[in-house]
Image (cartoon, rainbow, N blue to C red; front, side, top):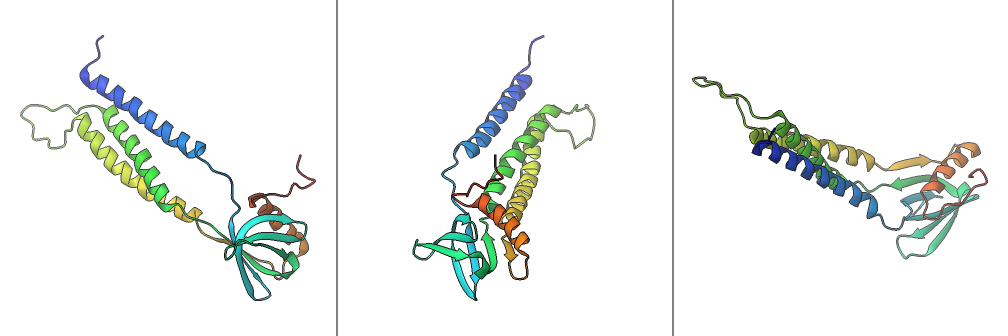
Length: 192
């Protein structure tokens, strides 16, 4: 059985979409640069200190000041509140959503094939596979853009923890989580 031009086109577009998605996903994971600690804002004794979290060590937090690049060591007992400033990637989410949603919509449109058009019929809703692919790419691309943007905006919401009134065990648990995010995590005896 010989393939028609439409079948060949659908197969080629399917392969192209797969390659584009694969390259996009691979480039986001391969292009990672050296890990930096998160930007934190620490309130201590009614003073605000802002910087990159370098290390959490015993009862201290070590930051690199955002103002002058100097190291700052803060005692945990002096800290009233810590806020991790997260950078949202709204437009990256929108872009990925458009690409993935549009590619999926186009693939579905092509896969559904041409509608059968009967002669002497007033059916206005018959479309070719190419027209369906365009409509699918547009609809699913917009849906993907909205979804991707929303997800990445939510991921970018800052995280705050008030230390005042916390037990030493609660502080310790939070500091362990904070340590994992730091640029130079302290290896605790619990890690294997």
